[in-house]
Length: 214
Image 1 (cartoon, rainbow, N blue to C red):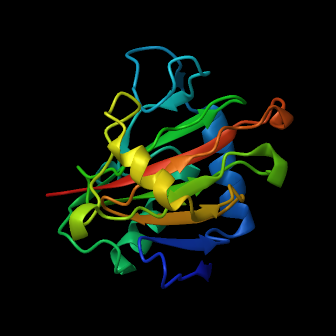
Image 2 (image 1 turned 60 degrees about the vertical axis):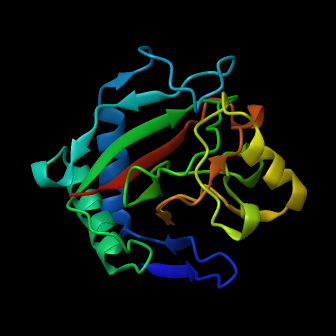
């Protein structure tokens, strides 16, 4: 496990590479392939209405372990990283996790996960090329009137958050590197770049985890 990013200019996220040993990472990928996924259901407005929708697994909680094979160890490791990180600075009791499989053309709109005590993303795909897109984007948001910027509710919002982002036009991105964990502070605005057509049949496989207040 290798911490690779502790950016004083962006204290809202941390990046940890090589989270799992090779054998455990391979076990996670096998588990991801065996899960059941839903591609229908109610429209989540963070996903573009005209874009391909991701396939999403059922949600699981760390307290319900044992989970599905390799996911049990992964969720335990993510929970341990969350508890060791200063980003998760409000009380929380459990971890909620689900798997997202994003095909080419899909993207996730801007949001802050403010109803949770923080979140994390783990990349479970075994290979990912830089020109396949799917980066996690952290725009620098100038706070309004000296106050901390709030979360964005989705693409149907009134546009004030997007306008503030455009004023600065800068930020950080984190590539979807396999076996990489990204920890995100509660309320920090983030979104994903669209998965590029060059990805072909490769899916951006992200295990999303959320610290549940309690």
